[in-house]
Every structure is written in structure tokens, then in C-alpha cells.
Image 1 (cartoon, rainbow, N blue to C red):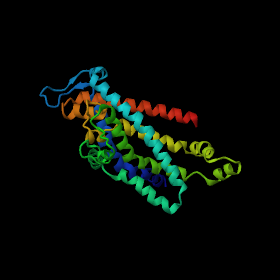
Image 2: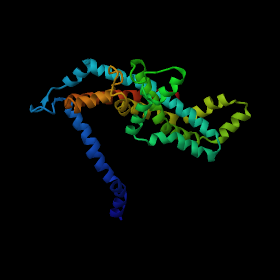
Image 3: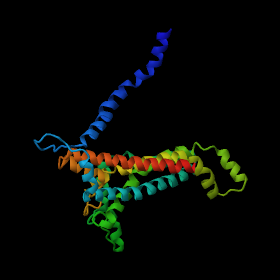
Image 4: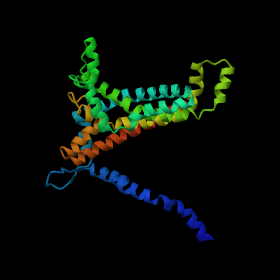
Length: 291
């Protein structure tokens, strides 16, 4: 009997063992290998063996103007993309939640469709949209005598990347928020209507407080994803003009696989991890204290 109970208690772990094995081999081990690598000077294209340099790679990154500029470009993207993406997704989710159920399927599919497009296809598509000479946007704007340098002007390039990101990712956040909205019981709204609450009051005093756990998840996931932005800038601008859209992940990629400085790239990767962790913790604390 004891052996049967032991086998029964271990059966769950046996089911997850294949996943845990792959997770450990392809995620956990590379993670700690990269941490160890960040303390070495390892030039991949050099015959010189790796040399332990301690925190030199980290100090070099924190004093490098290229690293700081890439980090600043990443911050700019996060500050613009996260509020606009989450805000747009919330507005669309609230609107879809008010239409009849049969029509919701079509609207959900329409808004979620861009999420299913790969970044390479979406990037090439929007690069054509933004082309100054024969792009779709300027073709329409030329009818009123306008020509906008969407991705060739330093002031507009990052904003253009953000606009494309909202179109590409908003549907995923919208579906999650819509699912959260549909879990709110109707009797809260019915009681509020009886008490004379208008639509704005019902939204701010019922919808937002009850939706806060889902909203927290969406915001944190968007922050993490935005700090790791790479595909949009790489496909559309290649980091230009004047490195204004070269984000940190792109700089890490170029350092590792163009300049072959693997130790330095690993150190910058861990600095990015620390930045993401700090922002995520701050966001969790702020929203949970409000709750």
C-alpha cells in the first residue's frame, strides 16, 4: 500500500519530467552559462582563450555611450508602446464586450489576426507602408500634398516603430482583457444601475477594480516584451537613423554575432535582465498596493 501511494505521488512528477528536462537543458543551463560567460573576455573569432576579467564587462557596458544610447532607445520604446498598447487593448475589449455575442467572434478574430503574423512578414509589410517614395501611407498623404519621412527622420522613426507594434500586438492583450471582462458577474452592474451609476462610474468603480489582476498581468507581460523588442527595429529600420532605434537587444545581437564579443554581450544581457526584473517588481508593488 505504501509503495502504491508513493508511486501515485510521484506520477505527477513523471508526467512533467520530459518538459522539465528540456526546460533545464535549453533554458536553465544556457542562462547560468551566460552568467558565467559574462565574467570572461571571450572573443569568438580570436585564438586567444577566454580570460577571467571579473566585473570588467559590466563596468564597460555601464560607461559605454553605445550601450547607454541603446538602453535609452529601449526606454523610449517601452514608455510609448506599453501605455498605448494596453490602453488600446482595454478600449477595444470594453467595446467588444458590449456588442452581441455572435458578433464578438468576428471582432475578436479581426483584432487578433495581426498577432498571428510572424515578425518578419509584419516588418516587411510595414517597411513598405513607411517607404518615403512608394509606400502606401505616403501614397495616400500625397493626395493632400504631404510626404512624411516615417523611418528616415530621427524624430519619427521610433514613433513609427511603436505604431507598428500596437497594430501587431494589441490583439493579444485585447483577448486576455476581454476574457477578464467576461468573468465579471453582471449583478454588480445591475446593482450599480439601480443605484443610478452612469457608464463612466460603472467603469471606474466596478470594471477597473475587478479587472485589476488581469490588467496587472497584461501590463507586466507587455513591459517584459517591450524591453526585449528586436524584430520590429531590425526589420524596419536596422537601428537607424543615427542609431535612434537601435534598441538594447539589437546591440547585444550585433556585439555577439557581428563583433563576436560573447562575454561582453552576456554581461549586457544580464544587465537587461536586471532592468526588466526591477520594472516588473515595481509594477507588481504599485498595482497590488492599489488593490
